[in-house]
Length: 198
Image (cartoon, helix red, strand yellow):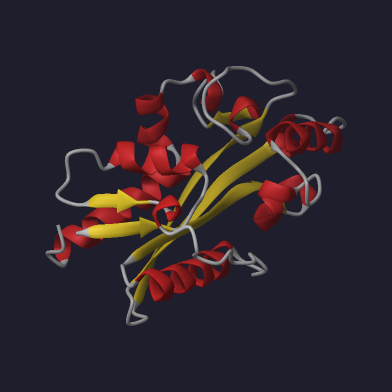
């Protein structure tokens, strides 16, 4: 069974493929469908964005599509950056610019004000439009400076609850075991198993 990942983020695609290694299906990426149009992520929720991307990719490719939208929510910032996590610092933002803006916005915050959570919503969409969504969360706090060289996005400043190191200080298997994406993927895997698609 082929599932098209609705992303051009190679690190995200590698993370998903790694978590499902050894299963009897394969992930294709949008690199296999270069003419697939970009989808504007203008939804107000992670779920809305994931479904929009999944529907567009499944319709264009004729394959089941797996789309996700994920991001960081800081309660003291009104759940920002939220759905704007990838472009928090503007339309030309990258990980570095987003991190700098986040740390700047939080520089006066202390203790519980630095509480945050990562959210990942995945949408599995079939070419006929049927869909199912799966959401994973991981709570933690935001550090005051970057630590670690692994991962991507906000990983260098995110300390998952109960851990003394950031996601960026963990190896891939340790992060996968507790990450928001890992938890959403676990729900997806259980669903696929239950409907005998694996």
